[in-house]
Image (cartoon, rainbow, N blue to C red):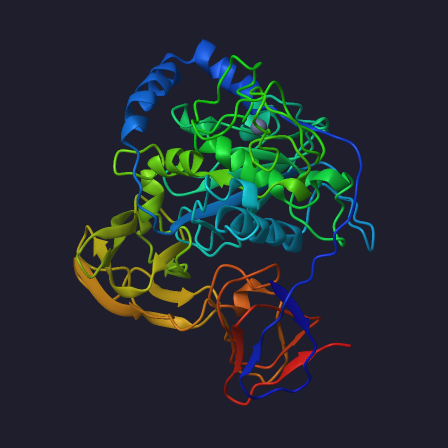
Length: 503
Ligand SMILES: [Zn+2]
């Protein structure tokens, strides 16, 4: 959760811990889920998917009963058309970080809890023990707040999978072996849809209409029946192979789950009614029904077993267990600048890690190139940069005076020197800015107050304007409109620096 704090001239460690409040609303219209239609299309058109569904029936007979917390890294892809924000209710489809974070919290409550299962279903209710985390590291190791934002010309993504592809106005997902992709867009008439395991990676994931994401009176959630963030748990159920509790058919069609009573159709609202069997109530509290969000509070043991089967060693989602998506980002942005002598076409270079793996390299420069700058992201560690000259006189002296510099994107120098060497030159250097996710280290020593909003003044590719996961260390005077701190994170001021928060 985010806290906004106002601080003047602070020179000590500040920790901010905040809490959140939900204000429930009541009653409205109804929207449904498109997952079954997608499932039927994939069964019809995707033979690999069809085969996977048959195999999964066999595997499901040997479901695991293990009950350990399973962590699932999540990235939200916000695909928006309307950028207009109105206060205090934000009606834009470019929904806020806070709204997305409230969705993660709701998802964790729905998928890691037994608290609210009603007495009548205590025998069959089970805790999935899933923990969802917003990605803190992108597929390249760079810091992320677990959200991508993409403008689209499309005003509506009704039902089809177009939101998952650039060519149809959407955006591609991140690798499905490391992330659960959740697309957020305007799907008018649908709350969401999801793909069952076994289909093509590029379509894999969950999509939710932006008006059904998260929970909180401060957000634009116009349908009171579904303003508690429960759509995500429903769609995640589909993503882990669950079907609707009524089996998307009448009393003769089953959801292939033995401990859910069969039902004639979807349930709406919150009232009790009979299931197909005359002495059985329908399980309107099940997340895989269409009942109001306020009435949903359980998965059954068989549903949980089926969902968790996906995380068994050969399971469709098992690779997520070793994902580093929610680990601390590891990359630092560095810049290599080479000023050549008169023979740039003789020069090449490579950057090696401490195991002599070549991480980056360059060369083949056109004749008479004066200077090049390469931007790279590298993990913390020890490195060697090696320059080569095919003629054997380096890139200095005699035919022009060349030199090189490796520095952080912030401007702080790591190593530099002249191009004076024969055939090769090896320069080892450490890259060890490990003590904070974001570290404001300043770009000059003139004593001026530096620009917080300039990424060049941070040791990472970006500054913590939107959201971030770790401590912030301030090492130079700077000025800022506000500081957004996640729960239990520290704002650490060093070197007697002044952090000035403008009124
Ligand atoms: Zn559904």
